Length: 182
Image 1 (spheres, helix red, strand yellow):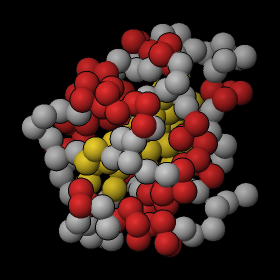
Image 2 (image 1 turned 180 degrees about the horizontal axis):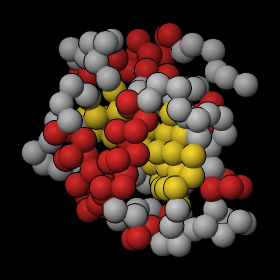
Image 3 (image 1 turned 120 degrees about the horizontal axis):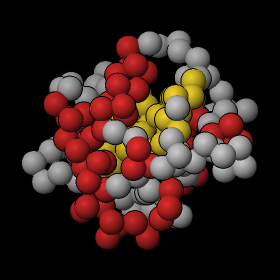
Image 4 (image 1 turned 90 degrees about the vertical axis):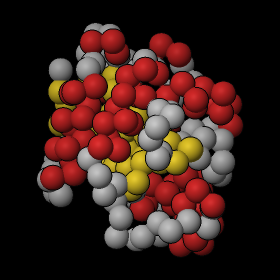
């Protein structure tokens, strides 16, 4: 099951001042560095470094998303010298789905927005700090093709280089099937 195109919500999102001048041909990368469970959060400093390095790829617009309850956490993941767009706490659920429909991919911890992105057909790079069958990606990972799940016994075992490599892999392979990386 897939969401229908959310054209009205996309128009609302792209009227936000932070996204003025966005070209529809410009690749959009969404980053959701949060989770309601603190044990499922990749370290903020690693997200900050990832966002900084994604910006160096050039030609992409990076948008950081999250709920209103995560607004205070956003500054820890946003590099001050990077033109990442901070939409944390600014979007409704439908607007978030619309943003994901326009995004090339989403990078996130194991969290609800991963499943929303998968439901609208957006590929994901998902970070799991557990490989246990009851709590790991086999049971809780995104459904459908085109996702990379990086699962390690601990989130601190996942490097920025691994995540960046996964992002590059998804950008360069348009019809990739899902894979889990241990």
